[in-house]
Every structure is written in structure tokens, then in C-alpha cells.
Length: 106
Image (cartoon, rainbow, N blue to C red):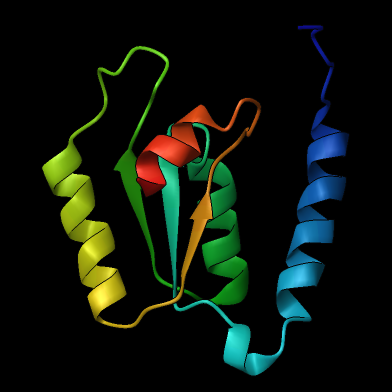
């Protein structure tokens, strides 16, 4: 896989594009809570939380080495939010293979 240089200016441009898209969503599709995936998802999750005035929580989930996975804790957070009929916005920093997000959602 080739390395791609992703500058802070690129990040800001992408962040603004994401923020605009979220703000333009119909009201019935708005999220109730933001769940950031540690560590890379922390910064964008907190930024979105402040900008959209939504509560935010973090979970540890990494398929790179598996050392940060605390399934019962994470499951309780996500299940409780789901049972409370909350619309969750999951935020992470990268989605390359999809392995992390797929294992989390399963």
C-alpha cells in the first residue's frame, strides 16, 4: 500500500465538508450522540461534538493488535445507546480495509 501525505489543510477541508453534510441532514436523520473510536477518532469526534452540540463518548477498539478491545464495556455502551433509540455517529480517523469497523459492528 502506498503512503499518502495528508496535511492539516487537507484535514480541515475534509472536516468542513463533513460538517456541512451533517448540518444539511434532514432533522429526522440527525444524530443524538457521537461515539469516537480511540485514538484516531478522538479529535474529529470531539470537534464534531462541540460544533454540533452533541454528547460524545469514546470507546477503545483496535484490530491492529487487539490489545484495546474491551468487548463487554464497548458492547454495553453501544447496546444501551441503541436500546435508548439513540442515533449514533461513529467517528474514526481512517477506514482502509474495513476490518476494525466490521468487527466492531459485529
